[in-house]
Amino acid sequence: MVNVIWMFLAATGIIYAMFNGTMEDVNEALFKSANEAVMLAIGLVSVLVFWLGMMRIAERAGLLRGLAKLFKPIFTRIFPEIPENHPAMGYILSNFSANLFGLGNAATPLGIKAMKEMKQLSGSTTASRSMITFLALNTSSVTLIPTTVIAIRMQQGSVSPTEIVGTTIIATTISTIGALTIDRLFYNRRVRRKQR
Image 1 (cartoon, rainbow, N blue to C red):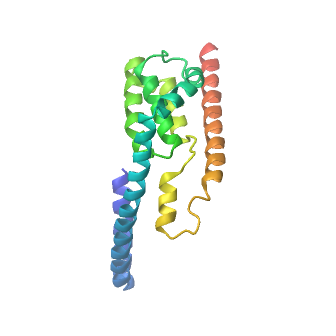
Image 2: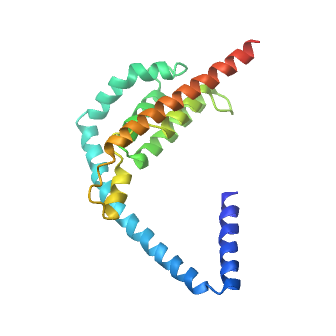
Image 3: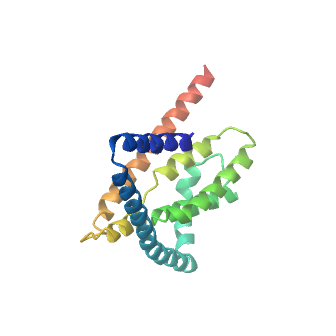
């Protein structure tokens, strides 16, 4: 469906430019945007490689294991359906730790594995309570170092690319609290409806 929408938008723009006599502007914008996208991607690679390397060092040093132990009591309360030593809990904690450092690319495979484990655990074709909670938590996850945004700001010549760290921590903390609150409200409402 998304591809159809994109195709419709592109076709509408090109047809409009043909009748409006601005095809040269469209071509120029296309090539300029493509060039900027490639340059941005190359710039992001260096920063992501650096932070992925730092993440690897943190993992080898035991920092991620320490964070996982630190957050385990909280996550066992957030995900009461998942047994404490189930692999899904390990993937959830690793995903949270990666998101904490703004490493969305590293967090995504862990999130997918966590979802697969939770699906097997529920044995249902519909999303379980834990899967919904994890999606809300993963989408709004607390971020200490917004690596990708810092990289984009550096690429675009920002004087102080890391000045957003403080506001990012505040914003993502509030978004995570909000997501968990809404998740719990909807869950409790659904439980009350079933009890009637």
